[in-house]
Image (cartoon, rainbow, N blue to C red):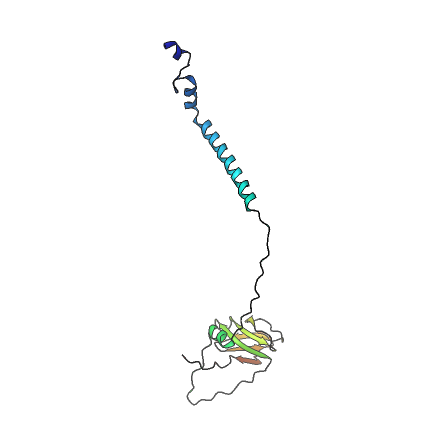
Length: 171
């Protein structure tokens, strides 16, 4: 019986010469496992890709109505506060051409900010201080409720726009 182990032929697993070689090279088993894993994942990918192919069908979208902007709400969102009641001192009304309509102001000092101005009944557009409006006037400065326009940025103001009066709303 002792001769069987000298020739490395045994009926018991782990008693022979081959198991000693496998114990010294565990990377071969790990590499084979990784190759089989990659092959299985690749086959699974292609099977799932073949199952997932369906014809493209167009979905009809319902037409959406565009929201209507309320100028009073926009002015309130841009920081317009209704003017306080003055105590007997009447202010002279400023003549504003009907061509320009001021709908909102974002004031960060007099030299910075923006104004939402409508021109000739068109939808309002935002303009920064220093921007040229379509009529050739430049937005010179903004305050909480007014915007000044003039031919140049540093020149005298020829038009002063003020925000429209807010309607009284019930709380």
